[in-house]
Every structure is written in structure tokens, then in C-alpha cells.
Image 1: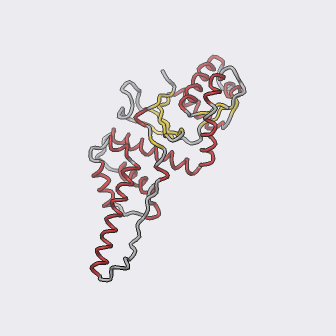
Image 2: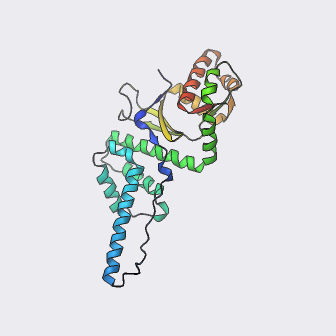
Image 3: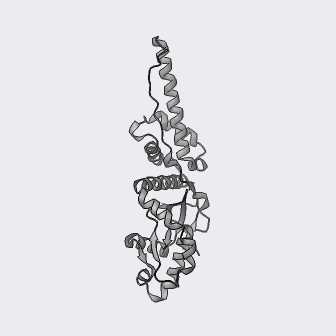
Length: 251
């Protein structure tokens, strides 16, 4: 059984953070001098704002369309009932929508897992933006994995580094995972190139990942000293899996 199992259904393009919701201004049209014309213009701009806000939310949370038959109606209800805060335009509005959606009492457990997954994507993008330098450095080091992966277990001087941009979550149902996976399932979201990937993490791999979170960059020989000799071959195998999915670098 794999220590970490990639979920293809939970893969997102790492692009929505660069989209920004542009708030339209209710500027006066110099050609409109009559009060009636000005009111018409305001209504038109207001409708454009709502349409743009709706489309931005749909694009930012498109995974939910697979879990909610009434997804478009939910967005419309949110847009009607929750005023837009210009300070939270775009990314912040999507976060508020997900929070609002998670508070709806009539969601099924499966739908709540879809919301958790979408929140995981958004959280990864937020952390990557806040730690953009660390994110960029890690992505550069990833290119060395193909060369160094065959050396793992033979070269004790390899530096092991965990992807600094990662977010934990728990799936309570099998809406997004295979039927044979145990529940609840611990999952991890992290960026690789232009993707946000999701993996199911078993207990031994979780222990290793949390160790790497605290250790920072660590030599492979120093890492292995923290496990009994009888378990080190298993740890090396887990490191191979983590490197293969892009969760650690070997340099």
C-alpha cells in the first residue's frame, strides 16, 4: 500500500490567485445629463458588477460544481444576500463564500468534503502568496529530484526538504477518494509547478512529514537516525514516494 496516494480528481490549476476581481466604479457618464439616464447607468453598472462577481466566484470554486447540482443557484443566493466588501474582492470574496457555504445546515457529508477540498486549494494559494520566496526556491529545487532520486539510500549526504507550502485536511466520506480507502482520510494539499496536488497520507507517512515540518532541511543520514534501524528501509521507501509526487526535494 502506498504511503501517499495522489488523488487525480483533486487536482487544481495553480492560477486562480493571479485573477483579481476588479470593482467597477459608478462613474458618471459625461453624456448622461438627465436624472433618469444616470439611474439607468447605475443599474447597468450594478448588474455588471454582480455578473462579474458571480463569474469570479464560479471560476475560483469550480470544483464544487461536481458536488452540488444547485451550485450556480448557491452562488446567486450568496451574491444576493452577502454584500461585497471591496477590501475582500476576488480572493477574499471566495473565502467568504466558502465559509458561508460550509455554514449551510442542509449540506450532505459528501458536499462538506467538496467544500473542504476547495478550501484546501484556496489555502495553498494564500500561503504560497504569503511565502512566495520560499515557494519559488522550493520549486526550483524540484528539478533536481529526477537526478537525485536514484541516489536515495546510497548517498547519505542528500539534503531532504519538505515543500513549505502545504495544507492538511480531513475527508470524512469517499466522495473524492476510492471506496477501499479507510475513513477518515488525512489529506495534504501542495503546489507542484502550475498544479495544486492532493494526496492521501497514511499514518507512518504523516509521522515522517510532520518530522520534516519541524526539522527543516536535513541530511538524509541525520533524518534516518531518528528511526530504528529496522524501520529505515521503510522510511527510505516513503521518501521516494514523497519525492516522486513533489512533496520533498532531494539535493
